Amino acid sequence: MLRGLSDQAIACAERIGFLKFGKLYNREAWAITDEQKRIIEFRRLDGLKWESYGGISERKAHCVGSGKSFPVGLETSSRRAREAGTFQMVLVEGAPDLLAAIHLIMVEGKVDSVFPVAMLGAASHRLDNDAKKFFSGMKVRIFPHADDAGMKACIAWAKEIKAAGGIVDAFDLSGIVTMDGNAGKDLNDLVNLDADCWERTPKFRGEVMP
Image: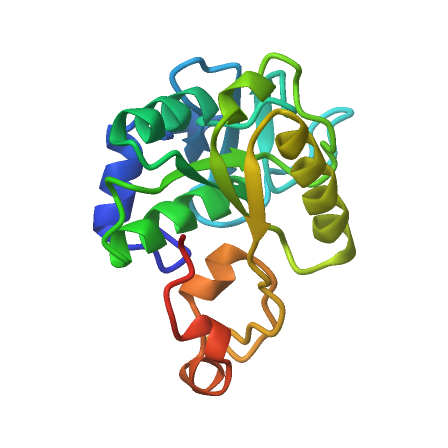
């Protein structure tokens, strides 16, 4: 598996039904979904983009189904958080960050107390009306991408979660430098943090999960 994630995190994501492996268009692929399977996002396992075909342009992901405004994993994670009595969820942007959240939750030993959900892209600013009830009474930490689109989406999501009866904070992912020397902006980049960046950036040295 690409992206620097542990085998344990991949196995956990499969076990709870958030990660699937298979083929799409004769390409080996990994996919993010949940028990309800409203939407399934496919990415190539080799990390390359899907080729253009007919009127469909080249792209990094193909989605089957509908409902990007309903966070993937919300019903499962909301239920588990209530059963655990922690009422703690983390909301991330995009399929890779959902896996990164599971990785970091495991690294920090919080598998039984913190539960992840994902919005599949910052373009969806509004939460599905049927999704809002699952945020009631929850404590939610948002991990927005450190760019303009991510910040705008974070503000919009936070307002909707608060209106639904949730408590919200956010983690600032700006300042990431990855092990290959590139500037990062998301939770998956944090998994691949450069050692020098870790040393000089206090916010990355402690636990990032609530």
